[in-house]
Length: 189
View 1 (cartoon, rainbow, N blue to C red):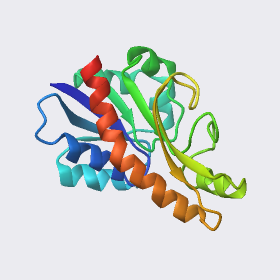
View 2 (view 1 turned 90 degrees about the horizontal axis):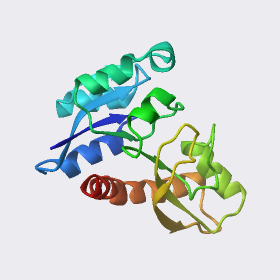
View 3 (view 1 turned 90 degrees about the vertical axis):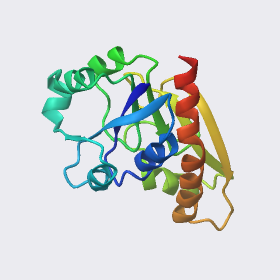
View 4 (view 1 turned 180 degrees about the vertical axis):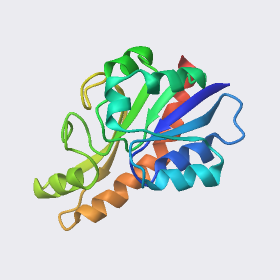
């Protein structure tokens, strides 16, 4: 059984979706939630799902090995970023090389990099009159949104779509594909 830790900064809906998808599976399970946001919705989801939660600050994350030690002490095999907004420090990317996966709400390399997350991405897609958008699931390296792409899922962006309309389409793609792609990568390892 492979143990997964999920990092999230927000509501944690993708984190919960992954937990539910893997429930009853004998190959992988979510063992830990980690967040940099002491008011994140993922905390309440973790409590409800009986998944331990670690809340940390920027200093612990970037200047110490404490988060790496927590992951190692919990025998974590895979790290999943599900709406986590900070750049991952090299001590973690090195320790989980090709075992750390992120989901981005756009078709990388478009609309990636620092500051391009959530609604910022969808607003940019609409403002630039894109005809499609989607999700990119990729391995994590030391740079924002530059790791090797594992999977991309696309959706149509209609001329009258708002950023909220695009967000809803992206969320559907995330729910549909992210847990399955994670399990596929674990099986390949």
